[in-house]
Image (cartoon, rainbow, N blue to C red; front, side, top):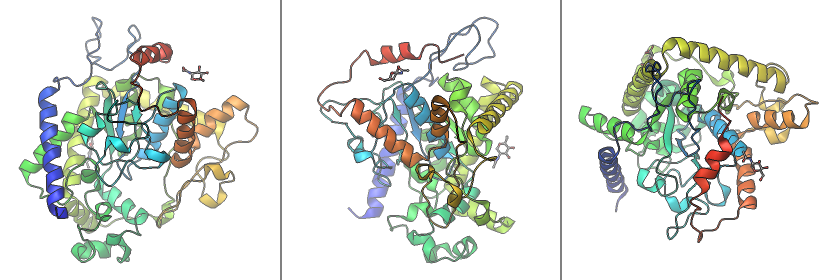
Length: 417
Ligand SMILES: *[C@@H]1O[C@H](CO)[C@@H](O)[C@H](O)[C@H]1NC(C)=O
Ligand SMILES: *[C@@H]1O[C@H](CO)[C@@H](O)[C@H](O)[C@H]1NC(C)=O
């Protein structure tokens, strides 16, 4: 089958299952919390002082490229490690789950079609395909992702993926956008970094026409699969919303920005360029503006702006406190200044990716906690991979113990305060 047909096939399949999923899913996607009288304004998923909700431990995170998703991944890694949760790792402990191909369950270490085994957290890079994802996680898993303004995303992608076929011959983003089809060939296997990258990661065709009908279908399909879409421009608000939905405590979502680049490779974009980027990434733009709207509606409905502001304040104070405790200096440093090589982030493309130095002389427990906050994703992922498969080697022929859920719930009691 020639490539364009195959893509069309994928899009159709994706839409079909999304629609059937929509039909099969109850209207309220998250389990409804009991609401104590007088707390009617605290919608489901929101913890209250009087009634505890249960921390969610089954999670699917679609790690959209270049959208602060490495920082979110660190949050998931830390929570999973702390609570001995299992991760759906790529086979061999790699960094991506069959990306840029659509996700396949069989690319997960320890998965076997004959006796499917479920994992708590799926968060490595993938191109989303729900029927396959469902084979490796619990049916009650919470699905979420994080989106970024496509204008900044494109600019970032151009720097980071400068070596890919579409970008390598263009001297600047301006030059690329002045005649994109001179550089961009949708048939190239790395072309997705150059156009509608979010659309692509969600499993859709990035070269599809942006008709109103098609956009509607795509938005509905995403909405049917995902419980929550976060917005990286409102990162702190996103983390507060996330902890509410997952019923986690605040400390679990405090983080330091990871995989961020030095501002020396950033330059302001003219209005003309901004418009060109929006046009070129029309599908991404539609996704972003739609879910930016529903994000704020969700906050208004579930939390309220006032409480959100207070919680964001507390989150920032806690982050500042951790920075004073854990870090040398005031924050991130250039790669050449990172003293501990195990904290050195992967350098890629033309971007200069920053990292951190830990304070000297921390006691063992504190050093461990601090180290986890600043460990780059590749190192953290491979450490967790080793731990998971040292503790419990892959046993593809043994069904998942049915007690696991209860045991975990039991273990997690008391983590919410
Ligand atoms: C996780 O596993 C370790 C080692 O088996 C154990 O000491 C620890 O108590 C467990 N933590 C939780 C939260 O279950
Ligand atoms: C996102 O939503 C906020 C709050 O409603 C709004 O101020 C902002 O302009 C929106 N961003 C975009 C790109 O639509």
